[in-house]
Figure 1 (tube, one colour):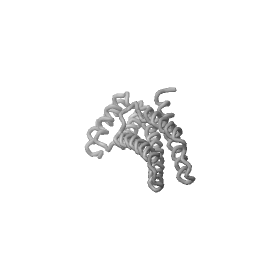
Figure 2 (cartoon, helix red, strand yellow):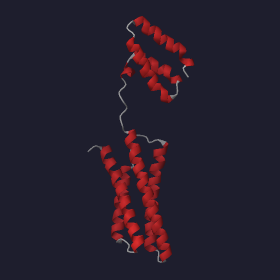
Figure 3 (cartoon, helix red, strand yellow):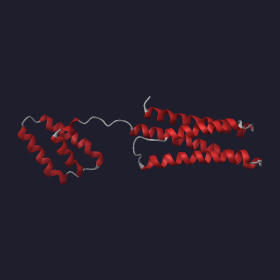
Figure 4 (cartoon, helix red, strand yellow):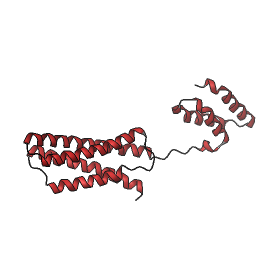
Length: 188
């Protein structure tokens, strides 16, 4: 199992543990029978271990992913503190409020870790092969495409490389490329 596969499994495990913890806490709120303290501590320990491994990345995360990773860690911390306060509280109304807060943060943790898993899977997909990037016309077209909006650059270069592939005369290819370079300011 590769390192990224282990992290993917850890993220799934963390989301599963958060769902299970939420289910147990909801049952405690509805039935009034709290889960054993040892089971809660063990679940929180496993959750912390899964988050520790699952929230590491082999790449520099973007701003949204960094924010969500911090949010997941904060949600786990608030969940743990809510449960600690819940075990220490004596007033029934306070216990119910703390248990409700712990349930909300278990839900939030589950959703955040699931979002992180989807986002990391998107970012870890290898970029498609671009054979035109190895040819000098493709490199020149990539430079010309810098004047275009980022979302249109790849399509422009691929289209123009396709057009160049249809031209049989070397002279015509050069003329076509020079025409594109000369028209570059008007492409935008």
